[in-house]
Image (cartoon, rainbow, N blue to C red; front, side, top):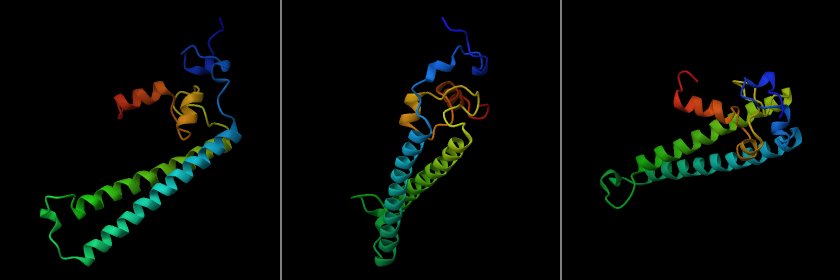
Length: 143
């Protein structure tokens, strides 16, 4: 049995617990892939906004009362939301790159413990370990 790592917030993890965590080179590759995915999403949402903008100016139809489909307002709101989510994701990629540069990527920004190899590979921008993320989700004001 290994002794608890004193820097792990008392949770009993040790330095070897996350030995398969991605290193800086893999981190950058994961972040590059995530960035490309988010840029594509932002571009698609931008194109959809252009289409809705064009539809709004090209027609005088009263789509607000069309029972057959979504309204231009709904389409606009959805596209704006998708674009904003993609842009927020790109900001997370920038923050994660800074953590790679400072050597803190892969460590929870709240407790200092390992974020977890699987979590990092699935979500390379993850800044919190599963425990802290769950705590944050349960009580967003307290974190």
